[in-house]
Length: 112
Length: 117
Image 1 (spheres, rainbow over the protein chains, first blue to last red):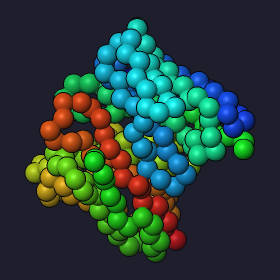
Image 2 (image 1 turned 180 degrees about the horizontal axis):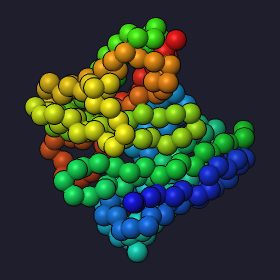
Image 3 (image 1 turned 60 degrees about the vertical axis):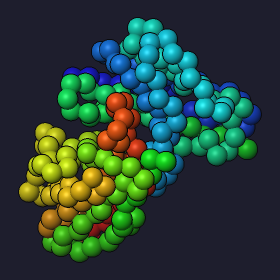
């Protein structure tokens, strides 16, 4: 079945550094979604991508929809302590189900 | 916009009791809501898809008689964990897909932490 693999699994950086994480799929997606989850909270939508090659920003966050439609990247510039959390990519399973499949997650730690 | 609430945020119950969790879309209508379960340090696992006015669709391995889902209106879905046992302890999260949008975007509630003693 479809799988979304995220890398790295975790990363710990210094405040002010830039961060890059990616999500790859074994099959094509028509939409890529990036969520952030704080401990004990539900995921919050950060960026939605709808077209191959699309580059979209949300403040210090930038995400790109890969040309092959099998991957996506999320970059965070000038990280701050509140960026700490787990970042998930997600994509629709397709058909009439409206279901999403979630990636394995990337845990980000930011040292002040 | 696109706010989803869950109630309660945290519940502790005795083994054998039933627990109801509510999921509401506050500022939009949702014909489809989803229920997820998340174990520590793991990703979200879809349990079921809740469609307004019809029966829920459960994922493989999820017992429909144990996890009762009702989607009574365009803004409310409920998940009832029946005869709860300690292994049902988990973080339950709902999401809602806006009715009037063509995208697959889902908006999530804050989650409910269930602890069964």
